[in-house]
Length: 362
Image 1 (cartoon, rainbow, N blue to C red):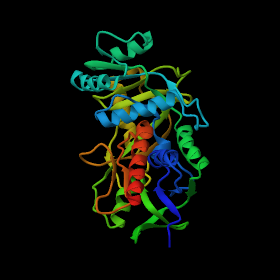
Image 2 (spheres, rainbow, N blue to C red; image 1 turned 60 degrees about the vertical axis):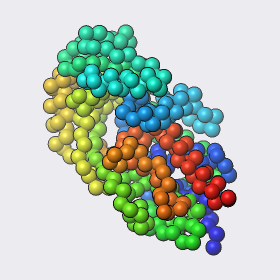
Image 3 (spheres, one colour; image 1 turned 60 degrees about the horizontal axis):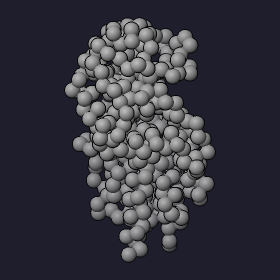
Image 4 (spheres, rainbow, N blue to C red; image 1 turned 45 degrees about the vertical axis):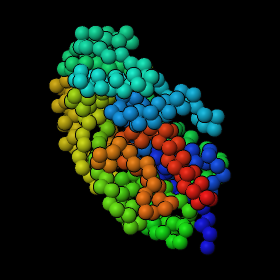
């Protein structure tokens, strides 16, 4: 029996949604997107801090972030929601060695930045911000003017809506329970039925590794880490203020329409699944704020949540075909950069999918 679809994308988070979006732009492919939850964005794609950060440690990831930034600043015509990026700039604090490394990569990418020692400040920073920084212990400051905050729900919807407008099908409540190779196609069994396609794109986030093993593929060794976010009360938050990320003490915060969003930079190993909030992390956040940003301590926490970031040891991302398993494509292990890299990562994954279809023709 011929497969009903050309490609099945497992996961409707940023990795899967952006891949389906670009694949729908590259040809008339029959695309099915399977999402385990009742709606997309239930996990990290909808629970992240929404920070577009250009200063990363890997050149290829940095190039993907640049693609996303360009799309946010000049949205494609097929995006229904256009005003989804608030350019605020970012302030990164840390060791001179670390921030100089970021600056070197930004320079190669053609990104605008300012590198300061602790005795000088970017002109954009107001007196109150400068006073907060003087109380913090740091060697260097990196200001990246084009960084900002993304409407993550709108961005995810843009990818999915544009793909569906070109014929892609989204099925929610369809957890992939088994992936098997049959002749020249893959069969994906879900609670919503079974589906067949020439190509399977594994963008299942924390579940991607287990799905690969269940399909009979080698264990890639993904590692998952829980991270918390906290929403605190704040009087009249200034939404144009740069977000601040302390890379030496691993914490960050940004103004939010509902107050102040904060993160303690926690990283606890956690199995694939929806992580519960650990109340002990709030105390760690308070300790860091008291030590380095006393003007913010102790904040009045209104809400806390947690999500997982998945990593592939020794590699920033896994966007590649599985050797020995024709028609199995990985888009996984995005390590907390899924939203920021999504436009570029999705394009690369879609191009690999098209290359597979082209090889089938030859």
